[in-house]
Image (cartoon, rainbow, N blue to C red):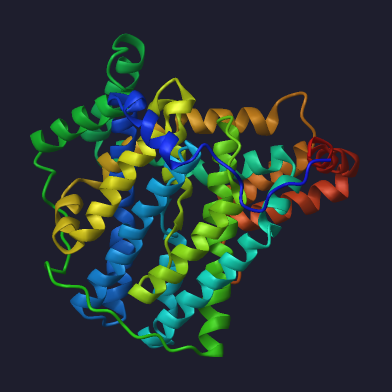
Length: 418
């Protein structure tokens, strides 16, 4: 039996750079652009809202944005080029919501200390190889059902946008499917974005967004380490990074036929958490939804080249972090209905693969998979940990109770393969 390395080997950055321009095309570039617009719009407002609620200065807010966007972009570039897979970096969106609530009870310097400690937890779990073992142990139907449940809200969000902005969302949706059927040279997701943007301009919907910060220099905060902040912020934030973002991204990549470097993804998320914490941000890690966009068929038919979409996204993400104070108002001028519709359309291929791999007739663990789907769709949050983590837990527990033989068979398969 071959011994598995803790840090997975990959083709290497030199190989990734050498082949990059071969795969850089309209489809990979447009998928990377859509993922970046998604990550730089609504999620940025969550961070800005948390900072405003906590009374942070404009400089501290910009430092927070710089930390998570610039480092998230670096994570994308490093992992995409090293492994030639669309492993996309960003930050934990539910983690930002968690921090927003915690800042009512803790000073920002205590929160910064907790951010660093969360990164250390994630790093240790990655370097130990534990996360890789757990992910290989989980039955694939349950993981895929969790992915389907976690991402289905993006697809339904595209439909809901028809109710709030029928012209913008409708134009984008029609353009997507017409392009898919008749215009093979233009990526459907790019056609949807361009046509939706034209509709937004035509209806006067561009320019309504705003951000309450101006272009100022980042102001960094010295950390303070306390046990209370460790228990209230560090532990749940670390679990969110691993159980929501990394698990989602891993499942998405598996659904698309990749062998993701699970341990390295965890290690780099830990390093990103530590570095972002010292800069005043809550975590820089692997991004579930953005990995889904960059790994989907919208990034090109050749899955070997989809890592170029992540490279494009990483460059845009990093640039956004460098000019966050000026860039946020520009991105937020785009209507939310357009961003939500295009993101939902980009998820179609990933969702199809996830459902097929979760509920195929020949697969076991169907009851556990259905429970995982329902829990992930519920968007429940317990003890500060979001639904994807609890979906995996509930799916495995139910499968153990009602379909134990199928669960044992699924868990034995990885060990035979190794």
